[in-house]
Length: 189
DNA sequence: AGGATGATCGTCT
DNA sequence: GACGATCATCCTC
Figure (spheres, rainbow, N blue to C red):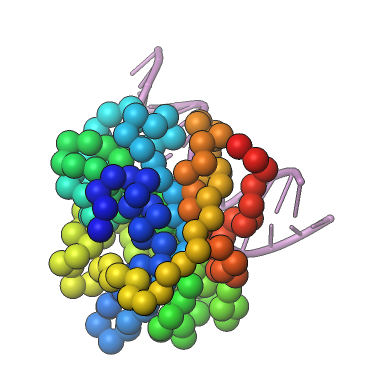
């Protein structure tokens, strides 16, 4: 798995995210990510290390989770070498397993909406701040698996919902997937 | 101690 | 398309 942020954001498309909580197992395939680079004004690490964003400055491939707007959690994968602050936001999953559990957690039965959006996927997978900092290759409750045979066609666009460095095309998605959160195309860079 | 901010979501028109 | 919810975090006083 790549350490460089942009390469990681693309490599994560098609990978599988597993959440095991007792007898409740939920699984999804990553269909949309955004890269937040070192020195990037839109990255949470941009203004320096703090208790909230410390995971971004740690080793790569850890889970960085934060609360946004007081209502939603966002799940990220830290990137770059220890000491460099950067990461990849996971914006959407295609549900694979445990959809009934997801439906209960989300309060909707609409398959397409279960994990479409960073806050929604955290709700569906029961990811909160207690998962901040966990190693995504060794943790027992939340981990990443590879693509297997699957080879997604990857599109790219501007990132969604940000104001700083908004023109940079650092959002990646599986082309044609109905589970992608934003528009499949945004206005040209 | 107090105020502004935000990588969102659900609801309403 | 617009708006309010809701709160941890960060910045200023």
